[in-house]
Amino acid sequence: MRSVLSAPWSLRIRDEAPLSIAVVVRGEAWVVLDHRDPVRLGPGDVMVARGPEPYTVADHPGTAPQIFINPGQHCTDAEGRSLEEIMSLGTRSWGNDPDGETMIVTGTYESIRAVGARLLRSLPPLMVLRDGEWGGDLVDILCREMAREDLGQEVFLDRLLDLVVIAAVRDWFSSDPSRAPAWFLAGADPVLGPALRLLEQDVARPWTIASLSREVGVSRAALARRFSTVLGEPVMAYLTSLRLDLAADLLREPDTTVAAVAHEVGYGSPFALSTAFKRVRGVSPAQHRALARWV
Image (cartoon, one colour):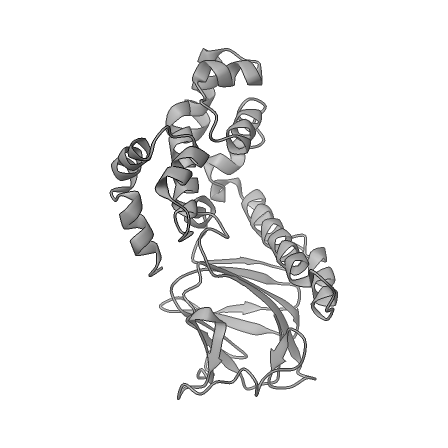
């Protein structure tokens, strides 16, 4: 979505989305998280906000919220009246002034599955990169494509948004290695990188340390040592975590059975998946599915 705004304006974001991204194309904006200092964004700056806690984006930190973004991206005023038609500015554009001095491109991921729980756990509540600190060239393409109505355009825009998020997160991790989680750093490791890609590409395969080490071309001892040193956990514990993260995502699909999920992530039976899921996550797959409906 492209938002075009003239001051005064203030958006209270309370959509409970697990991840949102905003890039200031022109003008400026202030991001205010509860109990934190306001952060100013200028042209080319990007912010990534990890939900579900609410926050405010405004022309100035002191401007009271006038517009409320609710779950499902429903936009209302303070009295709950819909603003979606009133503030529409055409194809994928929205705001209070078509010639407004501030333009912000935003994207929202409304489910954890669309982002990945592992990535979410690695991010702070608010991540900010300044113009020049990240590869923001894709934003120009995204802005141009937003005005088009070609066949498959929504899918194309979704993939472009994914690339913008990847670019921002990658550059944020890379700019300060202390920020990066172990699994991100491991991707560049000559032993772990290939091993992790093999596991992710075929998570259901009945992997053993021996079979994985053969594929990577190192000894079992060397592979086990790299996992413990860099990732801080054994090979099979990492694989279990990977499988259960994927299972947790798949279980959000209402028509997917536990048996089908078990097969897809490499467990021989629903019972085997349920046992592992409850041991690691503290709830059964069925309980996780029920709880996920409210997240």
